[in-house]
Length: 163
Image 1: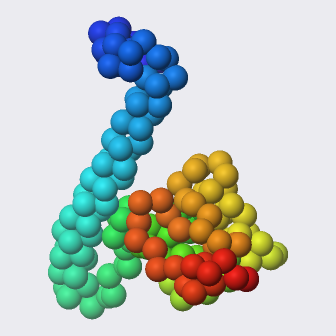
Image 2 (image 1 turned 60 degrees about the horizontal axis):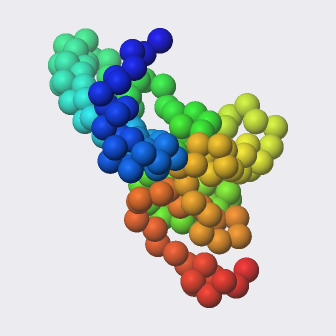
Image 3 (image 1 turned 180 degrees about the vertical axis):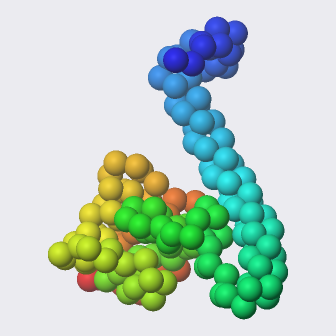
């Protein structure tokens, strides 16, 4: 269990004029910012790992004549992301996504849900969880979602409210 930083609690309450709800909102926002920063740092570390591993794998491949394994730049893994993580990564690149467009993009990348009986429903459920449970996305239209804080390219239907 984490140790409670009493001086920080007092400072947060004082800055929020002794309003516990305001203090909680402020600290939650700060935590989200730090989580986003940590995610960005993990991405940078993954890119560095990919560069260093890629150089080592290429040298090994030249030495043995074998092809180096493909690696994911964000987590350094040879395995592609699956499920909600795959959807999250695509959405973080920006844009407005429907379930069909997301499934098409995941398929293009080779990240589609391979064992799902109903792949479209599986992708739509992941998008809905990112919106309702994780609160990482926002609904920008009927069945259309965008990642919060990332660039969106709304289509005409979204702008006019037509569907």
